[in-house]
Image (cartoon, rainbow, N blue to C red; front, side, top):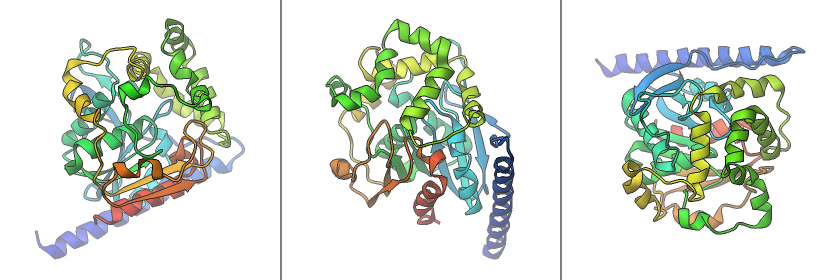
Length: 339
């Protein structure tokens, strides 16, 4: 195929993606314009076998665009990126937004597989997803669980990473370090992690998953005035049959109250050294984050050896959903340098 044909194809696909994304944004604007706003859902959710999972994911943008992997946190889902995804697609990015294990339509292929949620397991899920989609390299983007996962991929598999956007900076679980107490204010913000360490907490999450999530949304992002329809759009993802098991293992493992699994041990040993990230990076904080207070990003600067900038935006903990334009602009800085 000639270079001219390739150029025309790229222009066509880019224009098509832009038109589609504009239509998506128009639908969202229409939905929010009425007296009873109905938040737009990601549809269709596709399914693909990747590693030990049948992954549910949303995709938008041209197939030959710069790949961007958007990773959500807890207690959230893919709709944290409901406005970010079309903004990036309009700029020609191929946007992939997967449900993490235990969320939405993502399912384990084998009922006998351990329901691990330690950090290496969640990161390996994304490597398997990229392989299944035939994507060699992507911009890795995330907040909360997603930021940790994105940081791990950037650290262990830099050859798969075009760039990194990590909310709250360098996030890597250090099990010995996690045994030490935090300042009292930070410990207060982590109440749910200690609650989940108990059997009462596991039963509470099973019975009250929506109520717990709603409380966390409000305390994590005290200035975010989300409506009930927006919350319920995400809360449907908590009905996944593995949700409670995955969430409980994640937090208990972090506190060394639940064991990891042998197949991930080699990766965890590498992560325990807190490896330096070499890829181009943007770190970001929300100025009203109720979990991790905003900083100037200097405390973890030594963990990044490549180009890095730090931003503070007007948002709480769920930065992409609270400040989608600023977030998409930051992702685009990383994606556009590779076009």
